[in-house]
Image (tube, rainbow, N blue to C red):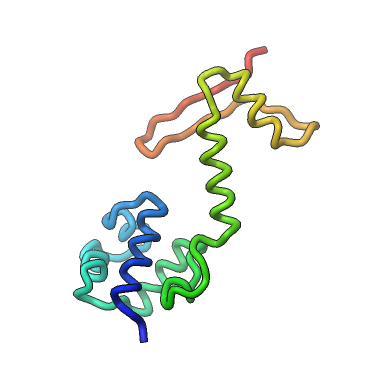
Length: 132
């Protein structure tokens, strides 16, 4: 039997990990906002369909972890990639030459970076081009 209170905490952990609001999370998995609200408040228990939609939309979520708290979230590989991305993003500066040096250390010798574009969730972006 699922512990509804613990499931709610794990679901909130998933929502927070991806930086989503309950509303945007509901939209991504294809359920009504009220469904998320009712589950998070403890009013309703999650249906099998709900759980499958979460797993389908966020493959990093493990079924046994979500249902029983056994296992890990996110999968270790995903966590490592997110940490590496965060560190790289923090190290990027407004100087395109230093950006090229930082990123080229992780790219093979036969390739070079011509341009980097960073897209933000608010729809804006930054463009960094290597000067010739």
